[in-house]
Image: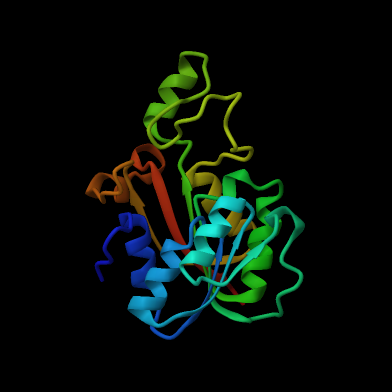
Length: 202
């Protein structure tokens, strides 16, 4: 599936989503992804966003959006009320990401999460130089970043194991959203962006 004007990360996510599904997009931004899913895959659902300008953009796209802070939780949603719950490049800015993932798994049959990989070799090199990393996939300085809980691919794998979360699929990208063979073989070292599809193991 190729959707115009979407970054490859979102195109890959869209390929995991079935037509006619109910989707909740956490940190949905300007709503362009949900709008594309509605147009191309006839999905229904909601976006959750906190930024007023993004909410205005969602409304202009006729995307259903709820203004709330993810740190307040997802208690208003019932169990299994969505086929997919998506959180793209947002998990690292949440106060308690492990609790939000639990809530996502409660309300969604499948969960899709993407995040920047702090284990990438460029980050490691800057740590060796004694400074916090600034790269294309992590462009903010330590004092200006919205990110408060950075993790590596290995960290996320460990979290899934601790919580008995089933990793159904995963793939890895560079900062230009390209897939390379090396990243799939050594993702913790070479991947800049990680994409996971999860559900709760029983």
